[in-house]
Image (tube, rainbow, N blue to C red):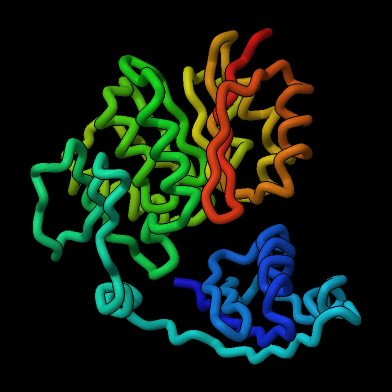
Length: 279
C-alpha cells in the first residue's frame, strides 16, 4: 500500500478560509479531508504531493488569511484496524444501512450493505456517496447495464445490483480499490459486479445505460465526453465529487455534449447531478 501524507492546516480566520482551502485542494487531487475547529486536515499520496505547488496556491498567499501547516507521514500500518476503532454505521434516510462486518445486522432496513475498506479513506461516508445513493434510489435500474467509474469500495456498484441492474462494471485506477470492490461484492452476495483496474481509456468500444461517476471536478471535466460517448440516447449520467460553486462549469460541459439535467441534490456544499442523453 502506498504511503500517505497528512497536511494539517491552521487557518485564520477559519471561516471562510477552511471552505476555500478545501475546495482548492480538492481540485488539486487530495484524497480526503477532515474539518477541524482551527482549520483542515488533508490527505494525499506521498508520491503525488508537491509542496512547492501547494505553497504557490492563491489562498496560501492571500493577505486575507494566515495559513500555517504541518506535514506528517502516515505509517504504512493496518488501516482496517485504525478504521474499526472509529467507524460508525451509516443510516441513509432510513432506506439504506451501510455497516461493517463487525456491526450487528439491521434487517428492518429496506437495504443493508456491508462495506469493509482496505484503507481509512474509503468508507463510503462522504457526502457525495450519500448524494449518489439517493439519486440511484430514485432511478429505474431494472435490467440496466451500469458503469461505476472511480468505484472506491464498490458501494455504488453494489447498490446498483441491489436495485436490479443486470451488469455492473466497476473501474478504479487504484489496484487496492479494485481488490476491495471484489471483496465487498462477495460480502453482499453480488455476482453481477465486475471490477477492473483502469481509467477512462478502458471505456473504448463499451456501452452502458447508466454511468455513475463520483470522482472530482477536474477528472469529470476531462473525461465527461468519454463517459457520455458510452451512452445511447436516453442513457443516464450521475455525477458527484464537486462543490456547488463548480456546478455551472460542469453543467455547461454536460449540456455541450447533448445532456439534459434531470435533477440535482446537495449536502454541505457538495452536489450530485442526474443527466439524460437527448441526442
